[in-house]
Amino acid sequence: MRKYIFLSFVLFCATITVLFSQTQKFRSGIFLHHSTGGCIWGPNGSSTSVPQEIAKYNSDNGLTGDNTVSLTEQWWPDSDNEWATWHNIFYNRDASNDIRPILEANKIVITKSCFPSSSIWGVGSSSDTLNPEDKTIYNYKWHWRSIVKVMASHPENFFVIWTNAPLVANATSDEEAVLSDQFCRWAKDTLATGNDSVFGPFPLDQNYPNPFNPGTTIHYSVKKFGQVKLAVYNILGKLVRTLVNNEQPAGEYKIFWDGRDEKGNLVPGGIYFYRLWTGKDLSIAKRM
Image 1 (cartoon, one colour):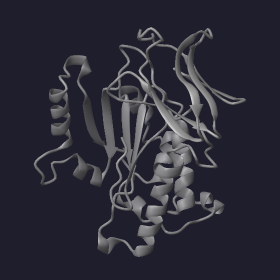
Image 2 (cartoon, one colour; image 1 turned 60 degrees about the vertical axis):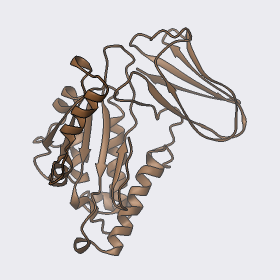
Image 3 (tube, helix red, strand yellow; image 1 turned 135 degrees about the horizontal axis):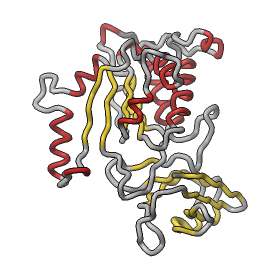
Image 4 (spheres, helix red, strand yellow; image 1 turned 120 degrees about the vertical axis):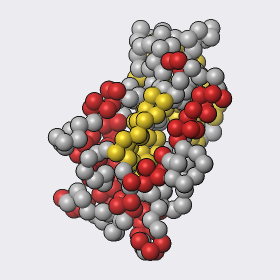
């Protein structure tokens, strides 16, 4: 679910967990945006639009009733949608823009910052956080780390961050374009892969659901060649499914768990633990 367009545009999927249940599905969502979001929603002079594409997807895949995928759009927040504003919103510091009802009403939440966020002034330093609205790479990273931390505390939702819409040639400069590209590359290549030194590595925490199917993709890291075992256990400590049990070289890996046990039965909703053994190291992550 990641797309990258030009050097100042990135779509970023936050770390998410999934509820394994036949009734818990990520079908309905909302797109929160301002001006450029309306252009994306369409038709904006083209022959198609997001609603038309969703309708086509439902038709092509035979999705009806409760299985139908839906997405609405809303000009939100009421004020600007700078990253400093989103930071305050996710920490419930903006009384005029309460996101909690939106999270409760929508499984999938797409947040977007528009053109102003593309105008990054400089690299910045730690003192920039004293002025949260300063448009520096340091501040933007701080905002994103803070926002994603809150997102990760909502396993009932699937989040997408959409940022840095490209500016037209006469509204930017070479320096701003380079800074925007630098920030976006950090977002997709460092933060999104769990390799940000400040946010911290999450070898078992980068699980994300396919919004249209029960299951989750588990990302994990292997530091050096050796025997690797990745298994799922229920809350009683009983083995549910062994996903990996072989030798692997050092590297980054991902594996899809379809929410079924060793016998192929779909597991009920509840809390599950992923245990990763790599040599003498053991990592455990709790998932719902």
